[in-house]
Amino acid sequence: MNLRLHKYFSSAAVALLLGSMLLTSAGGNNQKAELNLLCWTGYEEPAMIEPFEKKFNVKVNYKTFAGADQMFALVTQSKATYDVAVVDPEYIQKLHAAGRLTPLNASDYSFDAYFEPLKHFPLCWIDGKLQAVLVRFGANGLVYNTQHLSPKDVKSYRILWSPKVRGRVGIWDWYLPSMGVISKAAGNKDAYNLSDERFAALTKRLLGLRPQVSAIHPRPPEVINAMGNAEDWIVPGGGEWVAALLQQQGKPADWTVPEEGGIMWIETLAIINDAPHPDIAKKYIQWMQTPEAQAALTQRASYNSNVPNRLAYDLLTPKQKDALKIHNEQEADELINKLSVRQLPTRQSEQVWQDAWQQFKSAQ
Image (cartoon, helix red, strand yellow):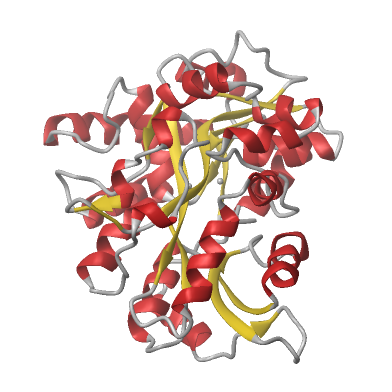
């Protein structure tokens, strides 16, 4: 899924234009090996790259993308360019179907210290073969202004339709997480697996939210700014990745997963099938599973998140763990069990959901 800060655009043309640009080098010119990394913003930060470069004497060349659709276009339109790509769960199946993933030997990677529900993450496996390694996860629920709303107010998504927040609801312009949490609000246990009847009810509920909305923000930075300035008091689809940054700025913000549940976003690492440096790619993924790298992932400058390796939390301060709302394995299990994994719609086409989202955006 949160923020990589994430930038989301839908134009494959933009992705292809980016793909024509050279990879940016994060290391010096005298390194003995190279890794070509395609990633969300944040993975290229020095705190994430430099320890790996020094340990393995590697130069990391990176390209950041602004949305998973761009990542997909860059990978599928390139040849022998990228070693490792950061892949959202929805796109593992797509890249596999396009023949662009290298099946991984599961024994090369350590999941022993992963939280139990995340040790064998279903979307990372296809036909019994590991395709990608989970390295981050987070929650889409509600992020809210604690000066104007109390924990009691946000126990349920019903607050979104309350007169108390009319004109104070901010929306992130990405249909999957935003419609996912509204689907949970509508009582759908499996947020993306809906009958046509339930999808019609979801669309009606979504349209009923429009009068409450102050703005539809194109990217997470705009979400964070609107929350920080108290223009918005509450954002469905927000989570730790928004609240932690606001808290660091001294803003009155917190996040929660309401009683109806929330959406889990994840990020995985996959090796491209024509990777120029497959051995270094494997070392990179192995490194990113270590407690040290996992702890660094939780505190990236771009945005914070949870991680699957429980040992990483031993390296965090109490304040950092407070922001992530995970201090131990029991709390991790409780959070994970409240979330449905973000994925593509299973009974309707992507276009049908996107059309409903456009109808919501254009409604007055």
